[in-house]
Length: 330
Image (tube, rainbow, N blue to C red; front, side, top):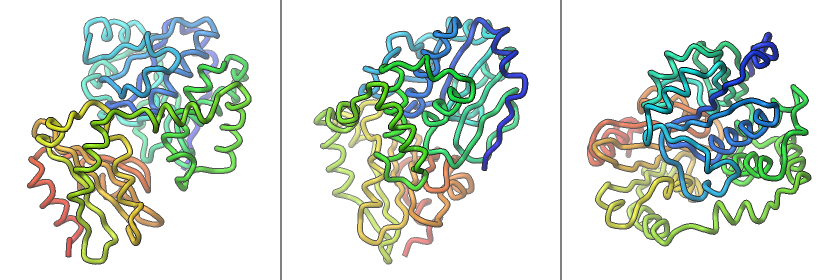
């Protein structure tokens, strides 16, 4: 589904000198890549731009251009709230519901600046003044490139900002293998390569620079995986005690959920990670199974048809039992 409401955007941008760019809690490659690339472009247009994200993000994204200037809301709420209140325009990237901004939600709701949503998730809320929503897109990073083309801004992209966009496309498409990857996705990727992006270097920074703790956690997760009787659903999980003993850090389990779908016959996989009385979930599926609907109905979450997330406010043993009940585990 595609919805574009941008009438009057050019005029509103012209009247906005102070701009804030935000994304969702636990920012991933797509969230950070889109925010940092757009920040670079808007600065090239003469704007004063602040990127404010809800909480820390994985180390493998720290090398991206503009990372040093990112404000972490959880590390300095007073200054961040001031920036948000003073912003004449706010961009909401890679999320479409205030709740996905976690502790930033109240400040964003109260912001008086014009609000622009650019996102590819399903069922967007209706509060933005301007909206570019397209669930068929591979990533918000692809959408940022398309957005720049709409307004003739691609000339403001350089190698560094192109690398930001390429990183988001690679991570959100699973290296171009997920179903939302289109011929246009590859075309946009090619344009980014033409700007100097080195594909192998990006892939290495994402997948081949992982800490030893990641492999230890991966091994523990795989050692205890469960499947239903038919082998179509794979359940993956890590307890808080396992994470603490094996060296968990923010973002280190990114992509773990995908290992379930690599098993022969698997059609859906669920990864659970316990943290301070909450179990965070990632769901993935193949074909017609809509994990967005499952996440919304049963796991306090949402996302895409074949990729979604959620959370349960309970301990891991109860969450595992609940999930098995939801999926009629036999």
